Image (tube, rainbow, N blue to C red; front, side):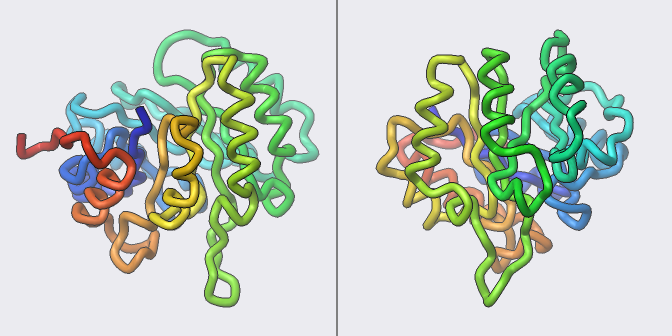
Length: 242
């Protein structure tokens, strides 16, 4: 069953996402980039507030700027972006080693659909690495979040529906879990609707769940609920009020 991942920057946003029916709470600081790293105090506070009622993941920034991982216990997943790694041959071996380690949190491989713009490794190279490590988790995202001519590029600008289908078909035999992100909103999710039951494991959003659709604004519970209803309309949502 496809689930909803909502990226949050504070305890208040995390609780709004939880109340709206988010299945996975993802921590990041959007002011710091596509996979902007939050400070550890924020991560700790959100993990404590969610208190095991949902899995929690955290963005660690870009691999080129890597710092130590968070010491906060309770994270299910962590992820680095690969912007700037296009000319670095070491990213593959470093991430392979991390993929093969056991325990929690699990590493999520990040493939940027706009990899040329991000100067990241080619999209298919990251997909191949995931397939070489069955059981992997992979996030497909966009690096550029800047609007141009009144239009903010979405995942489907870089990876059309047919290409998304190709990716989902490719990973089927490798037990790979896929999260689709990249400024997705109701129209993009609807456009992918005809691929059902070949859907991702998660739709990952932030801007679509924020006031005025602006990722720098606060998460709104009702927007989260509308997205959850769009993804799984016939399933009741367990939330903090239950």
